[in-house]
View 1 (tube, rainbow, N blue to C red):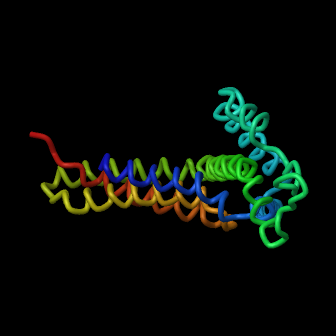
View 2: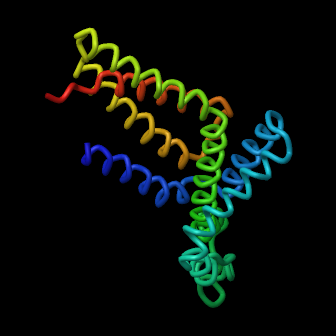
View 3: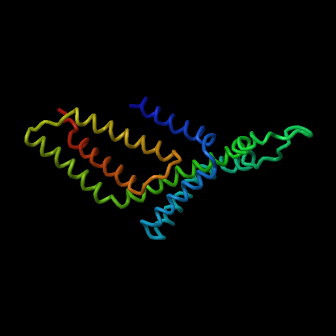
Length: 211
């Protein structure tokens, strides 16, 4: 289980490090703008602002307070100083777009981190909305297990293990999706959270009885 968690973490780190090399800054901006526009269609302005405020708090704690963001912006986020690669020698026109893209790497990196936190903040809003449902299914799982034990019914270790691994897979794949520069539907969040809630119920209802 720990090994799987490390593999998912490695996948996220790889995306953070290498996606800025492959994706233009305009694509990051466009992705965030599309998700914001979709959020504004489904939520009121106050809720969208709450998500943005939560995103900025997360980003400030992780990137600004630690000094990572100021360090990168001060030393690395800079425009291309000149297209002159040597005195009297200009950078070939065919290479100019690639050179400009490389100069945008660190800015893209920070965009990707911010987008990741935006999606975490967005998902947290749905966790709040679905709290009554999540509480109900946890309670149902506990009562189902008690009923099984009282009536000597079988609690399945197979269902327990499969459900637990599916919870981990959903959580990990969601974190990977949060780092990918592709607009996510607003339905992505409630669907994943609901599925995780269902699997949590199965885990709780099939916890093995200790002698």
